[in-house]
Length: 585
Image 1 (cartoon, rainbow, N blue to C red):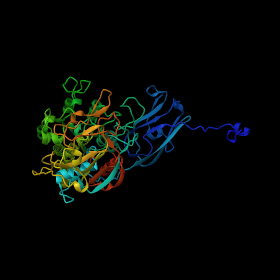
Image 2 (image 1 turned 120 degrees about the vertical axis):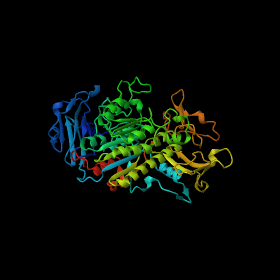
Image 3 (image 1 turned 90 degrees about the vertical axis):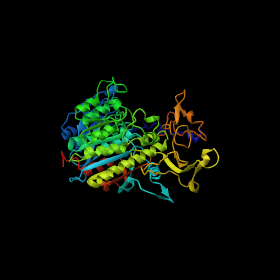
Image 4 (image 1 turned 90 degrees about the horizontal axis):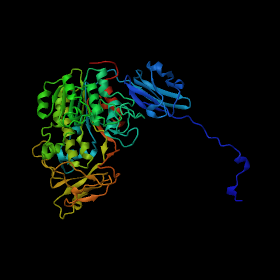
């Protein structure tokens, strides 16, 4: 017998002892949640199996949860047909700052989380807060905007962006509860609630509930301001107002696509200013172009609640001067890129030819909101940086970045006469975009790849801004920036701006896979790039790179080093001294 086969009889008779461990439970808010004193949230415990409610124990720093909150819970024996129980306590808070340990058990199922509850300073630093979001804003977007807008000579920029001179800067981590790679919903939700969330979720923790509107809620900044202050709230975006970033100011849903429901959430909170696209979800289903599935007319409902309505640039200018509440809807969907709308004037904008610029919407919002002596919070999003970056259309994304920066300049001018204003400029997530040199049409031959200049062969692009409006006079100059994305579907790289409309890099084949769009195949010098993302993706995706945030004004000193995106909520609540009960001063 070989030694390796020999098993001593005494060893073979020893029973194997498998350790028995208690089943884990899911607790919301999650471990390491950091929350404002008095900030509202839904508490939920999800057990892995059906449990006896009489055996459930929930202790918060050793005290029974009912003693802490004085509220009855909802016990769900079998949640959504799953043979597992849940316990829910809605709309609760913790009013004393400090460390909290939550311990939950029911038979063999046990779990615990730790929370940190913080108190804001008693003295209010800022009267107003203006938060700018460049959706998808990355370092290359800023660099490209500076080169195109200001120029560069002998290695030095010929001018600075408005955002460049904001005094404080930090890096922000953007990952979500369920993924290292995030979307606009959970990233903006982190800014607006101070809580983490999952991809596609707004103002909720992602639980196992099947109903997208029945996940544990996190109070948004818009709701908090309306509940505890007399401040005004404004939301400006060149996307649909129901899109993830503007929606995050007021919304609670696991599914960011719940746009009709999000409109009703806007109505519940009633921000004083709402400017953007997305009228299709405000209009009843009987109206041509509506995307609602009911007969609710939210335009009429807002008007009945005292809102003045603007539908184009002219009416925005007319209504803004006198309005105390203003609803502006300038497109049934997302508004159009500034490159098409202001410069190319192509067929893209023929349906809505008189859309206001983001700068105009920003100025009007400030005019309306500043009428409130108690101050305001304004969120301004340049959404189309992201909308153009996904299809690898860098020219449009950088033109939209210039428009964002000019809107920041509007806010900085306001802050000159209102120094009690905190200005924050950041994005929600980044894109994998880089500038590597130039593309020079005057180089010999027809191979566009050989016209790309790198290092000393790059030289400088020949954009000009003779009229001084901050934009290049032409986008299709002969020596352009060479800008590429690091993730992409199969597509034809043309090395040229798309003058007829936004780039469409990939289309579906008969198998449902995305392949390179043959419409660009015969452009002289076009090169097929084989994709590096899954074939079910039609455009580029977000990157996990850190986001840059800059700020200036009272409270900006808290912007420093590396920050989690949830910390931006604390910067804002600290500056406004929220969490001290109803305030107006």
